[in-house]
View (cartoon, helix red, strand yellow):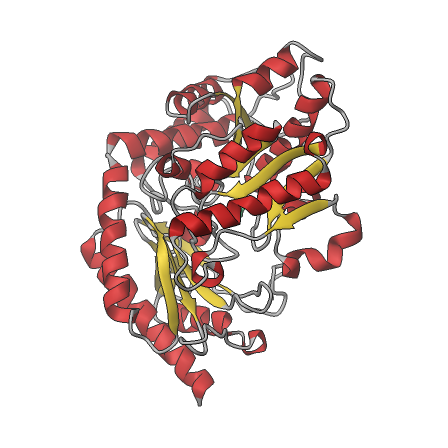
Length: 444
Ligand code: PLP
């Protein structure tokens, strides 16, 4: 009997005892292909020798030094590497221990930026429905997933939500991508004007929506329009790439593919590949300069921020990605994954949409393809798929949820960047069988 308070108190989870490459092993001797990298975390797979060596070396030299007194070689090395390849204008790094901490810090940086600039009246955050930005109260407030928010609502800071850019459900039949991008982005402008243009701090969005929707990329030009609207009203753009960033979509940052650079960017998960908990905010020069020329510091901090072990893990993982040219594999194997998913599931009775970028792919399940009607959430199709997949030695990340009754169950795939064609074949075969078994059980 476990004494750990898990997410699902009564679920009996296998005990993980080892991992190697793309597989995890449990205490019962079962192997699982980690086709979701946990939750899009394990980008190098498990037990990568170069990362293990870097961590052993760091531990021998220095496990911890508080950032109130010291910086460290590992933290400086990671920051330098991140800035080398950062989107235009992002010249500084704030290191934390995970995604929620990164989002929390970014929200506070955005607010303090305007206080430093003498615009303390700016107080509104705008985000999107059906997004997830973390579970701390500020990040949860920005998120637009009611299932996660509902119980905590009186405690959440007031945020405002517009629709996501979600072509499968929200693009009208016959509407061009261009017209849809314009219509979806206009919601932001309308919301800014409704709230008062000089009272809005920031707009927060996942570049490619992850956990709550299943790898939903924006249509072409949507983010460019969003950037232009933010610039028009002096509103900061925060892109949350905690899940979709650090190479997952085939470019180091997902927003590179949209030709957009934010004012603040949050990263985590694949940054340290699960070898240590690490996250970061990349911030623009103008925000850094406002702090430097104002109060002189950012009013924030956590005991473990910039932890040398976490920074060493991040540095080692990012160096391996560059040295082994893994982004090229993400692009090639991402296309292969899309091809095989389409071949196996494209005509499936209950598969409504297959989408994503690189090795970040989503499969959306529907009760009826023509109307895109989701399965009744009470049937918990996503949990059934997870169970069927685990029984076949496959880890995928299934989720359910609704937006105005429209979003149903989906499966998120985020395999390690080291997968090859044969691995993809095994993943798709097991996933296809799991979806067949789960949907058949519900149809009976
Ligand atoms: N932002 C996004 C887009 C995420 O997907 C997540 C986690 O899934 C978070 C923030 C929160 O990250 P963490 O769970 O590391 O706190």
